[in-house]
Structure formats: structure tokens, C-alpha cells
Length: 276
Image (cartoon, rainbow, N blue to C red; front, side, top):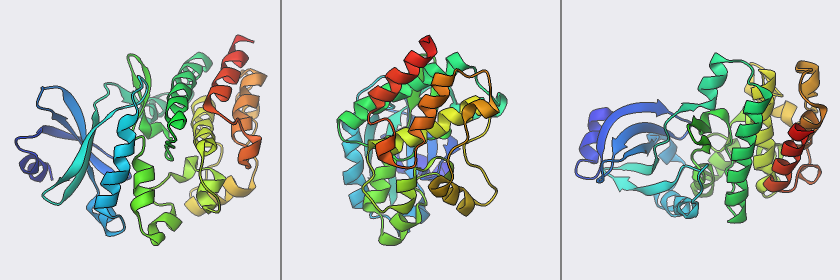
């Protein structure tokens, strides 16, 4: 695959090596014409069976309007030698998933800093009408300048350009551990409050050492999101301030109307809980 990608992008990007594989794409470290490192992401070929490439590329361009220090910027996208690709700024650092695999529980101040950065990023994107749809630890890099959210707009582009079978399945347009109830059922329009639910799942896991809902069977996890209330964080980690546990718990409400209504409101509430 590396040789194929190098040949396809010769003269445009200097592809160095493969650095990862996500739900939607294989990721390569490359250098642009200016010599700066970039993350070159090649959409999985099997995904193209259910996704219209031309519409995906039209949809993904919406993300190029996002310019924020805590959002990886979309630099380029297109198709070369049957490879559908998009290019984002390369963010130096470990993913939140990698960090949590080494330390099962993060400190409260560390989690609050991550929450503040990500909610600031979500506020910016939501203000432009763009929903992430796949907030998860693998899509968060902890850089020297703070937490950075990756792949903004990608899950939406896959969803918007996919066949009915793909969009009903939830595959590649979300991750079961972090999916909101409305994203699972697809019975209503997904709005910004879905991202807040997903982020709350991430923060819960970072603090408790486990996500709010877990089971070896993915279908059971999805059913738990739909029907079971999230555990109280303080039953799993008593040292967490009550206000912080309540703030995350509110974002995990089953009904969007019961959650925080904006990223800014959630950010301010968590910050106040920490001060308290």
C-alpha cells in the first residue's frame, strides 16, 4: 500500500510512512510542497462501495472553513489514481487513546484542561453549523499546545454521501462506545448536542478508567445507550467534585433537551465546578 500511495502522490506529496488506520481511512505521514508535515488520509476502498466519492469530496470541503487552534485543519482533498483522500495538518503528540492505555485514569485537572480545549473547538465548529459525529479518544491528540480534535466533518461527509444501508448501520459514521441515542436510532436530525454526549462519554472514561457503557457485544452497548442511565461518576471515582460529576452526567442525558444546549454552556459549567 505504501508504494502505491507514494506513486499516486508523486509530485504532490512526499509520502514517508504509514502512521495509523482509522475507521474511515489509512493515515500516512507526508510532506507538502513547502516541506511541512501533513497527515494524508486515504479512504478505505471498501467504504467506497457504499459512499459516493464525488459527493464525499463535496461534503468534506465544508470542514475547510474551520480555523481554530484546537481543530486539525483540512488542507486538501481529492482523488488520484482511484484513491479518495483528504489531507489535514499533522499534529504532534499522542492520542488520548494512547495516553489512556498507559494511564487508566487521568487527573481531574488534566481532564478539565482537555474538556476546555475540546469544548472550545466544538463551540467554534457548531457556530458554523458543523457537527463532528465521531468524538472519541482516537480523534483527540494531546499536543504541546493542548488537545486538538481530528477529522472534523469526515463522519458527516461519509454519512451524507453514503447509501441508505450505510447510514442506517452506524458503521463508519460513529463509534458505538461514544454514540448518542439519537445517532443510534437516526430517528431525528443530529445536532450539536450529540457531540456533547459523545464528549461526555470520553471525559467519563478519562476520569473513571472505563466508558459509561461497556460490553463485549457491540449491540448491547448500543442498547445501553438507548435505555440505561449512565452510572454516577462518583460511584466509580469518589474524589471527583460533585459538580463535575453532575456536569458530565447532564451531558449524558438520553434526551437532547435535557443536556447542555451549547458547548459554551457545558464548558463554563465544568470550569465553574473545578473552581468550586
